[in-house]
Image (cartoon, rainbow, N blue to C red):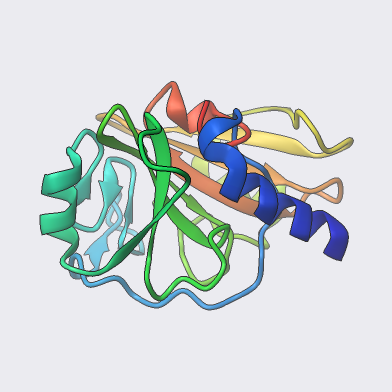
Length: 195
């Protein structure tokens, strides 16, 4: 498991030029970002925090890098070589990039990846939940398919109740959520990161 987590971290760092997102979480805290105050879930049932179907806090999918940086108002570290069309940025407080990262492609914010229990997805999904709990939370909006790389694991894809945005939850072979991401197609469906 430790070997796999190290491999996944290396894949995330290399993902800007390789393909699609890896699936194992790495432990570590994620602090609140300076972008916006907590809001309520669209259904009004639970605090949604910063995670949204259409972005994160004040950050909206489709923002260009300049607008994103102005809305974020904090330091970001770019992952991957300059000049890549697809890359990740992480807040300076992130110690392990697989815990929390923003994806950009074509100069636009298109997705964010979460591999820590410290963040809650819109609607209440979290790392550590069982797949059954995710299906119960999201109902008919959740579809399930086998994981591309992990035998016995699955991917649960949840469409926004209205508007744009998709959530993707990845589980391990025991049916526990190991990480999740939110974004817009096609980028939200990249399995290994930038593709």
